[in-house]
Image (spheres, rainbow, N blue to C red):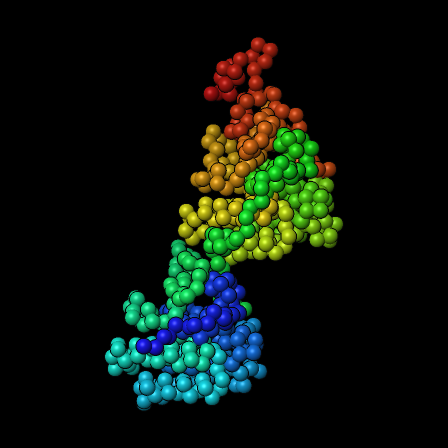
Length: 500
């Protein structure tokens, strides 16, 4: 009985951003893997991208086609992509059309041709594109299974890693899927007017891998895979540091006084407020104060470009350019259009793990929420992000816009808010004596005493100011204030004069 499983643990990198992360380093050397997907799913780009990366690192690749597009057309389509390198053809990267051999001699002639070419060229990576043609011309299911088995034996003996690209004819799980060492599925799904590409690793024999659905794009770079943030954080071995009493201030005296010094290091804070109530400026102040304390901060923005953010901050006396030049204040921007949640997650993890960031401000939870194609997932995504920040000692703020400008009901954006943040700071505009005024309130500060009063919040040319507690009105949180009774006036009388 012949053992066909790869006996080596040496990895063959795919060179595809994100895919090696899912595969914990790449394919196992000498293994046979099947890539399944309907036409247009990205199989051919994936196969070529892996090949060109392989030859750049010293390997030799053989790309065999069976009733696929012509090589001239394939190369013309691949030419504009960054990974394509015509100078590698045909010395290290060889294209071979084998359909006529298959049609005239059957599966036996095809396996003989592949065996001969692999050995003659010293091939270390084999791509067989169009496996469905071999399946259709096979005299029986048994004969096709024998072909897969023979391919496994041959490539395993010479240490040649093999990818079989096929549509699978849409028949679901079949016997040959159980024979290969791994099965990757590429698919495209539509949600409303959006189309999302997804990659699933159904099987990866002999090795751990990141399970579940992961989104990917086809870009100028080729395939770019975005591992799910939840899976990335789960497989991280970093332990959260012990809790400390260290505070992280905003640099706004009145607010830091309300917080008894600031929020705790490694905590997560929701800035909840109506439009125009000052959430973005609060977040920028928090990052700037950290930069002044030599803590690198990152502004992860959806609504304001870096140029616009710097201008707005300068108008209130907050000059960011010197901090940016020192590398202590970073800004990044992505328009709030059709973002992929997993792509955003990968960017955030990179910022946290690789940039040495100690403070993070995610401005625009609503834009993040719109990037979700499975709405209930947003809570798990944010919980994973919060846990990653805690584990790395990163103090995070994120801004959330209230659903209404005025009203008696104040809704939180998602359920399970206790999992997402230790602290909630509320900012809101309210009408008082025919004037629109702002206030700020600490709605929640976990494991710490804090000021429970509502204070007026001023945005002035020379900076942000938090004043004294409001003592002249009630119901400020609704935005529809009622002046506090005094000097013989009663609350009932005031309400009656307002027509209530």
